[in-house]
Image (tube, rainbow, N blue to C red; front, side):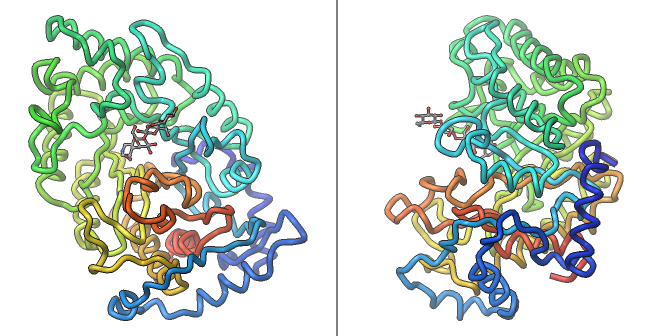
Length: 426
Ligand code: G3I
């Protein structure tokens, strides 16, 4: 199994927790402060009492204008998620700015308590590690790796190659030489970075998001990839995998993408590419499903179907960027035509059920030996990448996609993950 960090350390705390809660019920078992809020505990308890069979009609009538996320400033720590799983339980973190992990004691506390794998939300992307050609700098990523080592968390590296404008260094964007020379740049970046972190990362997203939703490679147009364009085709993908493997003989090497949970054309394109790479002897060892999903989309049946296709190839399968926003909008329409302005107990229960069903689907479909783990894309609701991205005409507090509220209190969603990990029904 991939649990290489912290298992022994955690055994004693798990035992304590199990004794304290009478058998790992997922209830609150450990408090770091005698002032752990009874209002938080009772809010969670009363939330749990709400039927998980809440009709969408009833929910869609909820549009109160008062935000109700917990106002407690204490953190309640239930049985560590990582102790409930035989695979890595990961979390994406920021390493600078207002949401920086290492400058927040509370964030460090909940991350170290519940998770055993870190992903840098940004700081291991190309523009951060090689801002100018040949100028590699690892300071913040190294700090994260070191903090992880000290606290029993491993690292999933993200990402060696990704076309997204923000994270591609200018020297690559402006490159005007031959395809071969560009492939050499890709090789050098993947090789140098993978070599630097060899032995310190469990796995890499080697190539991220090479396909359009249609299943075509990102070639031309607004959504085109400079990697495809400047390399003169898809060869940069194999190049990056080979370089990463030559630099790091043990890390799992993933292809990672979004909207592949839908089990549609893009899923099939990724699976076909993986088969082709395997046939060609290219060292891909896993497929990552980002899993930026919604409360009601895609269906669990589609998620299972998509995960199964990767599992059937015999590859590792990882949920790499899970989040479940309450409201969603990419084009000005809201869920069920309604925007929820209050994070009600009923919505919290819907979200709990959804997290539970997704993790359960993963465990049902992916054989134990092929589980690369489940990573949540961000710690607390107010830190999510979705904040500000959605609903620019609304107050930015209506997405609530993660496992912790803005005060780092555990949400019912966290208990949903815990339920799934323990094989409980959702
Ligand atoms: O750090 C700068 C700051 O100095 C500057 O003042 C500010 C003004 O724009 O920007 C800050 O950088 C932002 C950065 O996140 C750190 O917060 C960038 O603008 C912003 O574009 C960047 O967004 C990241 C995005 O990837 C693009 O790289 C998100 O945090 C990150 O969560 C998101 O993650 C991606 C995965 O890598 C791939 N899958 C999709 C996922 C969500 O988009």
